Every structure is written in structure tokens, then in C-alpha cells.
Length: 216
Ligand SMILES: Nc1ncnc2c1ncn2[C@@H]1O[C@H](COP(=O)(O)OP(=O)(O)OP(=O)(O)O)[C@@H](O)[C@H]1O
Ligand SMILES: [Mg+2]
Image (cartoon, rainbow, N blue to C red; front, side):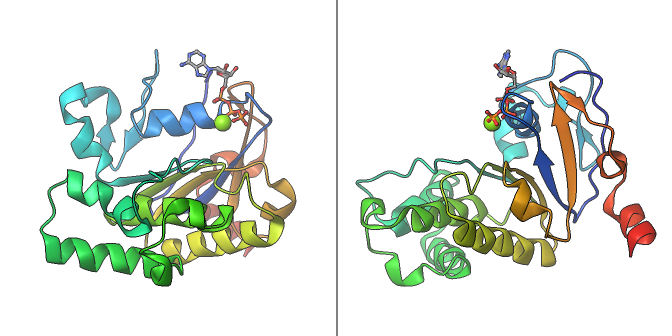
């Protein structure tokens, strides 16, 4: 990252585009506090991430759902157990845990497969299990790194529609994606980066409110 200044409004859904090695994953990792910038600041919900020490990272992460290209599911556990994992770790009470896991699986259309093992599912379904796991703790922010990298265009569109539904209930989303052809048809802002820098583009620095005001 170099000389990068950008703002994403609470409640926005934004795509992050750029060639391989542009810095998309790096930006997402810094937002999730998986990496730290050597210089500069990142402010999330009014909180400067430089001021969050190692010890407080788990608390910070509770407001974030992270989705990667490969959901890295645990194959010996059922779909239900995979999605429940973050809640088990957070010490959720059993009834609440069951309710939340079922609600998350329902959101991604996989409630009927809760007892199956990941390897019995298609790639698109496995990706949706990863999404359910990322949203089961009701994060305010979802960071997705190439969530549709392994999927065909139809399934990719399904995933983006699912994200748009989360966005409608107030979740802020930042989605790194190569899927330029698909994204350009969607009504969301794209941030374009190359070699760790923002590319000159009107959508890069303007939050959605201004963008909508100008472009309807
Ligand atoms: N921890 C790190 N320290 C130093 N350099 C890194 C680190 N992580 C990534 N890089 C480098 O930073 C650049 C951006 O990497 P990044 O993974 O963010 O790219 P990307 O846009 O996600 O690419 P892709 O589309 O291939 O996933 C690459 O050149 C990479 O080698
Ligand atoms: Mg990447």
C-alpha cells in the first residue's frame, strides 16, 4: 500500500478491483488486523486500528466476517458444526447457538444440508457454508477476498445477490474480486487499485452517498 487514502461509508457495499498482486488481499487483511501497516492509519467505526493491541484483536474481530476464496472447511465435521465453530469458540449458549447457525444456513439456502459433510457438497455450496460461518455472529462488516474465484458466473451472481441482501439489512461489505465483467452490471461502487495505489477513478474516493447524488 502506498499513499492510499479512501473512505467507505457505514452501510456501503463496495467492490475492490485490481490485477493480481495489486494489494487487494493486503488491504482486507489490514482491515481484519491480520496485518499491520508500517505507516499510516486505518479507522474503522471511529476506532484507530493502530490503538488496538494484540490482546484486543479478538474483540475487534467480532464485528467482522471474513470470507476467503477457499472456505477451508473442516471435512470431518458437519455443515452445521462448521458454521457453529465461531460461536462455540465465543462460548455461546446452546439454544442461541442452534438458532443462529440455522438462521445463517437458511440465509445461504443450505439449511437442508446441515447434517452433510463439506465434501458431499458442490464447490458453490461449500463457499456458501463459508459465508454462513462468516455471518453467523452477525458482523457489522463483511470482508470478502475473491469469494467467487472458484465459481461459474451464475453462481458468482448468486453470491453477489446474497451480499446485496446482507447490505440491505445494514451490513457494510468490501469485496475483492476479479469478476470485472459481472461487477460492472451491479449497482455498487468499485475501488480500483494497482501496485498498492488507488487508480484515478471517480468512484475511488467518493463514498456512495455522493456517488448516488451525482449519478442517481
Ligand atoms: N506480508 C507481506 N509483506 C510484504 N509483501 C507482501 C505481504 N503480503 C503480500 N505482499 C506483496 O504485496 C503485493 C500485493 O499482494 P496481495 O496479496 O495483496 O495482492 P492481491 O491484489 O490480493 O493479488 P491476487 O489477485 O493475486 O490475490 C504482492 O506483491 C505480494 O507479494
Ligand atoms: Mg489476493
